[in-house]
Amino acid sequence: MEKKDLDWGALPFGYVRTDYRYETRYTDGSWDEGGLVTDSMITLSECAGVFQYAQTCFEGLKAYTTENGQIVVFRPDLNQERMANSCERLCIPKLPEGRFLEAVDQVVRANAAYVPPYGSGATLYIRPFVMGSGVVIGVKPSEEYIFRMFVTPVGAYFKGGIKPVTICVSDYDRAAPHGTGNIKAGLNYAMSLYPIVKAHEEGYAENMYLDPATRTKVEETGGANFLFVTKDNVLVTPKSDSILPSITRRSLMYVAEHYLNMKVEQREVLLSEVKDFAECGLCGTAAVISPVGKIVNHGTEICFPSGMDEMGPVTKKLYDCLTGIQMGRIEAPEGWIHKIV
Image (cartoon, rainbow, N blue to C red; front, top):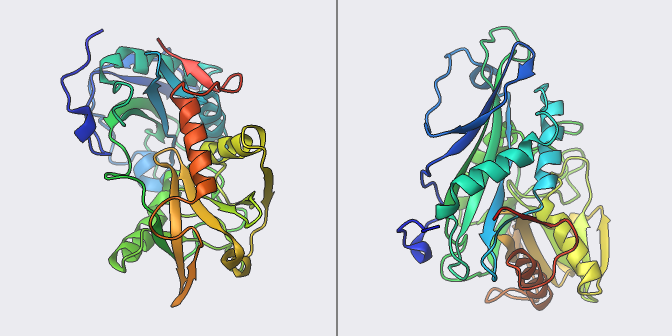
């Protein structure tokens, strides 16, 4: 299979139109058989549920070329599970059993020429999404839906290497108690756009959102989970019903405990104790781990001992181990690597 003539090392982290995408539609109470399509455009009624009441959710995962030349996807079964949970919360009918993984197989295989080669620093980003496509004017769920999955080759999230970032404590809330913070709903990200634009204007890379009830506990950023390392090498991740269950975060917790022999804690993390941690990072699909060197809380700076020059030593071990598993350099736990070709 001949690869596309792309400058893999110069790819941005952005959208590149590929040849095929997967689509299935829900009408008359059931999903059709679905399949690959070539048209990247979607035509919808102006009164579609996705426009009127934001009835949509999405996922994000990646395909990689491993050291031995295989094309694989990292833990797509967890993305399938998380999307099913998001659909249930938004009154969207779930896909038939196994359809999500079937779509992953089809769309990645059909676009194998766009999967970047091993060692290029690039990957194939996979974006599944589902939306209410039926006409809705009263406040109620749509009766028709479209599920799509497209792929795009993307470059490394950090151009020029991974450097610690500075973030700020936000005055805005990311999610309401008993709301939709624990699902990957489009509406969660829409409300985070104004705060992130404001943070960028003020020179910060991201926002730290606190729990909306007491504003004393760390939750997450607009698009990533937090992880902290104590001065005695314990990995700590915040626990809250409003936090999105990051697949990267869950994988890093397993790696810390079973590969690096670290103690792991998932618990409530008070903002007042953040100053006592040795390292801090943001974890997610796009960057795996983005190190945090400084947090600014309304003029008060929290500077981590790991500094602003490079990723902290424990965070670096976590990053190297997980990316090694993804790229086939380190043996993966059973079921983590889904082989395409």
